[in-house]
Amino acid sequence: MHLNPDMRNRWQISGLFLGALLACGQVPAWSQPSAFSQDNGAKQDMKDVGHDSKNAAKETGHGVKQGTKKVYHSTKNGTKKAWSKTKHTTTGAVHGGKEGAKQPE
Image 1 (cartoon, one colour):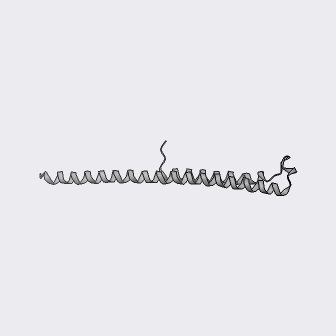
Image 2 (cartoon, helix red, strand yellow):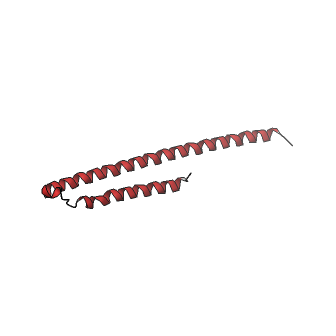
């Protein structure tokens, strides 16, 4: 299934937004005290929440980086393909013009 570049970018941006939303949406759930963490005290709970938030941010950042690289490479390849097709079309038109100029009718 081939998508045009605009549609592909929309899907990638939507995916990145959804990933960030899911990663950030989990932070309030982690801040709820569990039966195990109640014995540790509030200070340890805050540390745990901080570590979990940090890990979620790292994972989101990694996803954004991978998506950005993919978009960059897709754009680069599409540009090369368009350049190559334009070059060949222009070359063909020049040679066709030369052929037409040689044949007086």
